[in-house]
Length: 198
Image (cartoon, rainbow, N blue to C red; front, side, top):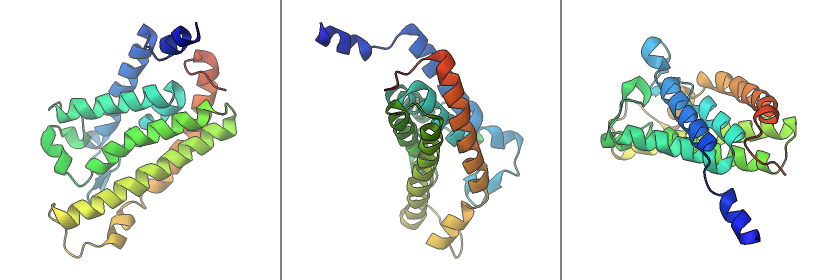
């Protein structure tokens, strides 16, 4: 009986698929906000709402389903759909210096979900969102630096310091949105009860 219960726990229900599809779509919308606000680009980094929706996916759907939503988003973009920032898409996007941020969305969602699955307090939701944001910045920025140094055409006088300076303008926005995501997801989780919290 325990084996059957455990197996069914890992199966996706229709409502799970619906929510995963919803967050995949939100990632697409969040990516292309820069297309309607061209000024939201600093250096080589477009300022988007992808991080916010990726973290929200993990907080609300849980580690596995949140990461799955972000993985599907990435695969749809690599398959050629123009769902990345500035309507980018295609397998060639892997060579983009900012592709590392897209990969980190998967890890950010997974870690955020993992933290709140172990504790359902409001504090844990906010901490999870901030940790996920830190993961996004740490991996994404380092990927961008090495991409410019190894295979992409780096801007003149590009340096590791400059890569991080590009990340300063969106940082306050992402911290505020992370806190908001934590508070919002904590309240919403009580209503939806999508993710089992210990």
